[in-house]
Amino acid sequence: MNDDARAAAAAQLNHLWSRGREFLGSDYAILGGAMSWLSDRHLVSAISNAGGFGVIACGSLGPDELGAEIAATAERTERPFGVNLITMHPDLTKLIDACAAHNVSHVALAGGLAPSSAISRLKDAGIKVLAFAPALALAKRLVRNGVDALVIEGMEAGGHIGPVSTGVLAQEILPFIREVPVFVAGGIGRGAAIAMYLGAGASGVQMGTRFVGASECIAHPNFKKAFFRGHARDAVLSPQLDERFPVIPVRALANKGTQLFVEKQREVIAQVDAGELSQADAQLAIERFWAGALRRAAIDGDVEMGSIMAGQSVGLVQSEQPTAEIIDQLIEEAADAFDMMITSGAVSSARERTQFMG
Image (cartoon, rainbow, N blue to C red):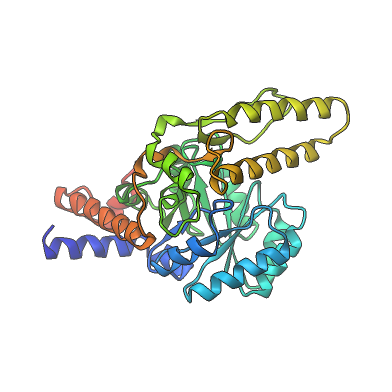
């Protein structure tokens, strides 16, 4: 790419995600996907320092633990970062208050439809709210309820996922949601995919799996090696045993731990049938199982019996790299993709770029 072409491609990239960059306050509209046990002070600050937007995964942390993590992250970066909160957390209100007390600028509400009470409490504290939208109708509802941005995450993602692919969600939602920035997630591992979704009207992207290979990520070496060896087809969905007992599918690399989840489902279903557990408590038991299984693999390094949550882009994570190098590579790849589009005439105007994905 010559200098003029590179400048034109860079300008196109900056233009397309200018809304996302402005919303996040970052150089690049790349959200770090919140990964329990891994999206901590080290990785989050590294992403933000490299120009992206790191997001702390609260997971099962309590309010005091979350406050300490926020403070420790703030000591490592002067750039903005956010927090991801699980809506079913029993201390959600206190977690929101902890974010407010530590001057967190952005909070993403995940793990279920964001409740209006949580949205209001966050906005009253001056915090910008992101929420996950698995369908157009819910996206419109969330916008009416006051969220400041949306994340649409396809089933190619790792961890807890929905039933629809990223490409279909993008086509369903992006043309019809203009009121707030929309970030696309799921299966994004290279800059060319970033360029594609920006060309479709996204304001930015969210990436998790790619950052497991970051040198600043605290994942156990065994966990990282499993990623480096993995392929897209290895990242499979957890099974559901009983339609009366819906569980949110989890995408992870297949191993013996997958069978443990089957056994856990049988145990919990039996308890529900016996009247020993309510549906809500049973769901919480499943979430606690996944949190423990993920820690067993990601932190303790037991990649046989633990859960190796990974998206289908895992095959694109081939070696360990510094976070800054990963982001630089993504930006260069995105610019190269735009250069190809500009050179071929595929993207020549703002009107044409909005029609890129048709």
